[in-house]
Image (cartoon, rainbow, N blue to C red; front, top):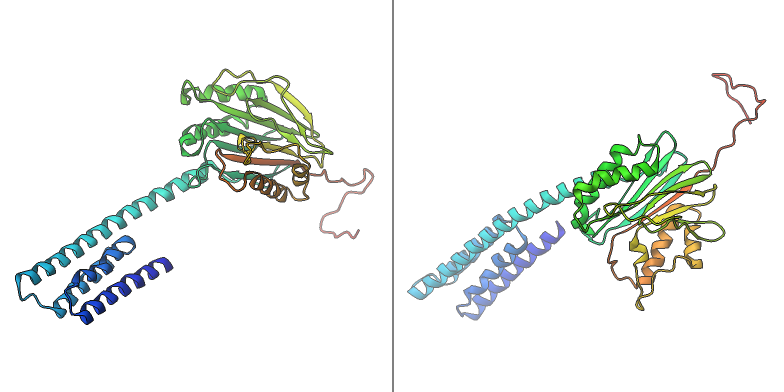
Length: 356
């Protein structure tokens, strides 16, 4: 709204200045009066453009009525350009409205696909940071989700070949297949094979999807990795949890296997996509995941602050240059187990307050 007011003030000011110059100089510079409608056609409505065009024609008639053929031609030229400006403004406004509707529709679709994860799923606290390579997209080639199964929380992180809106169709298929089967399939290895079968019709001969499935159980995490960068576990130092046997991504005949790792309270698991590992500095050096600064960032008291510190480190490493690939960071942390009442404690009666 403020921009349109400024643009209107500019158009009216330009037209007033042109009228002043034309009147005071006593020269036929009536074409300068077209500055108002021409400027209005770029940002304002067709109605405002038509009003400024009518003012331009009126000022031309007041200043020098068409007494000869040359004056009449000048007047007709100003009127024709004003009409053209009105048509241009009308077409632009229609195109902007259509683009706005499509943008809102795309935002709604992307919000449905990339729904925000809750801060906690079961006994696992979650913090997520996403940054698509395409600044106009909310979701690209990276997809993530979490469900609570009968055995505990289950987290998905996948990376579709490509990035931005080009990978959106396959990314939507990954999420749809996961949400359809993740809560009912107890075995993560079978789930990876099932996802590969569901995605086969959506993938071309050179397409693939790297996949990371993590099931959280008390004291441990069970990981299935199909061609994805290995997770990072915090502790006294950072541990890169490489799979015991490498598996190709989905779409390239994966051979998933189960990896069981300890995850005690106080430890965290960082899942990430190759937008982190592929980030380069001015000397083409990769982001140092094993640095003390990275360890300090990931062990910050609050998980969201930890991801913020990590992205700040990444920003300084790349010198602020835009990332070439989508980036997703997902930090999972087991919640502390609450202490229960003593075994010999009497049952708490209803409608009675207790003071400790």
